[in-house]
Length: 326
Image (tube, rainbow, N blue to C red):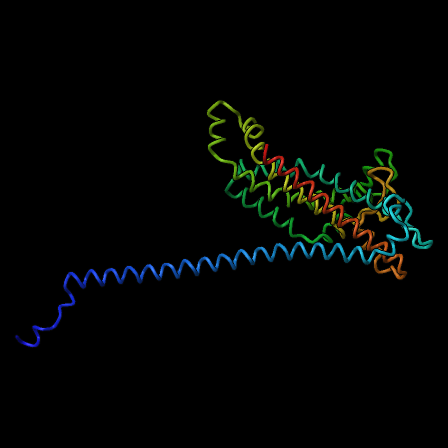
């Protein structure tokens, strides 16, 4: 028999089956390795997210501890009376946070009340009625622009334009014409927080399922009925989240409020009276605080603002969860 005829035929069906099986095993090993790599990447990704979350929590705890330590002298000196006293007198070394706490809450709540109708209206208009086109693009761009304007620009506009208008209004209704005060600060805050709540509300309204709205229209509902009975109930938790975010911005705003609120260290007698907020008094007097007790009292105001903002956030999140369940 010739030598060439003794060579094994590796292309026979037996060896073809063996090669196919080996190829399948190789592919399986490759798939297993790929799955292991993906699993390890997922673990690293999850651990990274977990570390970021814990880091944020530790940062918040660290800020709270730092503010508490730095305000220890004021806490020991005044105790709980610091939060109930209406006297802020650096000359005599007597400090009370009540006027600033009232000014902060009054201006923020009033600003929220002023901005609420506009925020919801803009959200419904852009999220439901004008979803595209030139009007949608122009209004959305305008809202984004308003959200990006520095607060000091709002403050200058308030001093030059808003304060004279408010002064004329006060004269017409028989109020002492300060011009600056809680009311002017609330209007400025309302203008500043409308873009935040409107931007989030617009996205929430646009995510309402179209099937629900079409079913309501098929049953004879008007656009007003669809808005009241479908869109608002479905989007209420998201809308409230936008309102909560804007309220947090109003609580902590500093420069614009400082320029138009009047900077009076006393409890405001009305919404037209000059006042002060926790953030504005810190901005005004921190550079002048040479004495240890004075500086410690200002830091304690910052601690109070931190606590108020945190409580507002926790209460708001609880309400959002309840709204989401309903």
